[in-house]
Length: 145
Image 1: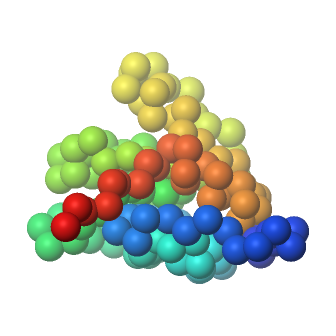
Image 2 (image 1 turned 180 degrees about the vertical axis):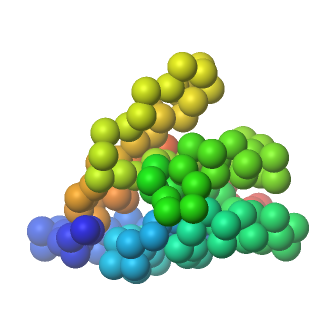
């Protein structure tokens, strides 16, 4: 579960680039809802999917601009790793942050080893989520007028 974010009285949290759109894929409604609430409060646009198949439908949309994925490794209909493999067909190079209540799986493929370095263990706090998103899912530069 994600804990509510506290800022320790140090003023508002830094805001993300308003152009950043993330898709959070997790079958646990509370985790998904609180993660998206945290991301929205930090200035991200947050889309949600409760399964790999629902995420793939969104990923296949040509109209959807997407800057990163937050993916649970264990989804009921497909592993998060397989979802990312399929997502790369439609969205090559899209950054990914994996989340899980379990240890990350062992990966023998070099690309998967690299991808799994962007991992955040559950339970995590909102501050930990924002830190990992900022580290692993870089925001795009603002469009210049």
